[in-house]
Image 1 (cartoon, one colour):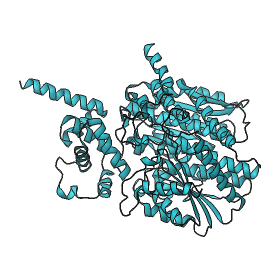
Image 2: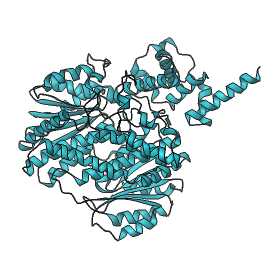
Image 3: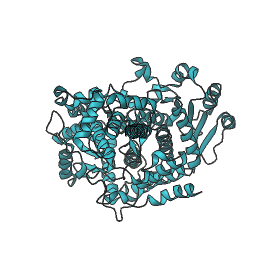
Image 4: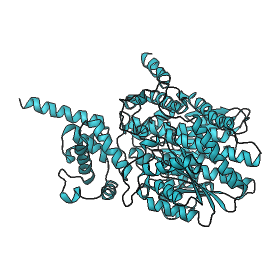
Length: 616
């Protein structure tokens, strides 16, 4: 009872601004800080993990009274959204020479694709031409897998923007960089600023402007902060827009796929929904209208976490599968499909997960996605995302160690409950570990749902009131709810597997400059050693050596990140060495015996202590 009561205090604690205190990690950008709410998330049971995630997500909607920074619902943020929505409406009025481009890296790029595809689909349903394009660093492969190297190339970003907007006279460019740090996006914003007669740049991110990365970008004279400063100068004249509310630290330090991804979705959908309603329904773009739309997401968050016990059951099932070497599969239908693909794709770079650990499949495959490059499976079988790919490649190998999660809706864009029931029957023949998450509106029914309930170990039903406010989209609310559930499942499962140390991603990949710097800071934070020693340990782990040569030390950062991409458990190896003083070979052996870093360190220290006592 005491543990349960303590967990229930977490949500109340989330209303404080503890992470804003002046002496709390003052040198770190907010997006890279450790959230005090989740310092012991690695020791929490499944229900505790979900409660902590709820408390962190609730921080998105805190008001700014007593806060040092602007928040999601702050006055300036809402007014900026109104102004950007008006720019979108102008392009809707005269689409022939205009274009809206959304761009980002990793999660930001995937959400750029999601928002773009949703908006263009709504236009096509009204027999209107598409006016949006998306860019993601690394191309469409980055929609489904980690492609970090292109994120460091500002020239590539600029060239990709120039190519997609060729021949257009008016371009609204929305660049997304949660930490105000991605060189790819910085290059695009700089290109816009060099051509103000055509481009209006918008930057979306979640750190205060003065925390934009100030590190020189290799190969050019730009820093992200210098680009932000130039945009700030133009913002007063409405020739550029900076939308950067502060959300508080992520539940897992630096994991911007969580709150950063959710807030990106909320902000962009508020803009596009307002512009669409203004153009097609003659609903004026107003301050209260935007604010009402934003508030609707807060209600969606409440609906989601009202099902804490059900979400915890999914976390526990998925965690058990990963712990025993099994896999987790998301099988989805309709507009929820891309969310499953996005969540699965983010696990490898975030947690050092294997490609097979968590995978997403969507009914309709690439036809449902409608991505620029079409069927990626034609060039690489690993990019199979259709249900047929699951049936042919995964289903025959399923066992009770695996978890299968069905994602669907009883109403809305797609209603394919017959298909859900049929696939559930086939999966149940292979594993009893089948679960369902589904949405319905008040009054929706489906006879097949009774059969699905019987086939599943658990079902999670989100029932929504019928949509009434003009700007509030039921589809958007359902998508955010689904995103929150999937983030909880994949994050919680990896925590239970031991992939998190305190509330830090300890097994992150070190495949670009941002991740390299994050890894070095993380090692310094967790070991207490000075930065040079931590970077030395990181390089030793990357190159699997106990002594670095002069040639290695003089290599540039791109060489190091390229080498790191070929290794495994680079950061855990470095941390074990720093905390225990053992060699790379010894640290590797320890982690093979005990994959959880904290356990490997404790076992090594105990053995060293016993050896020391024995020698006395």
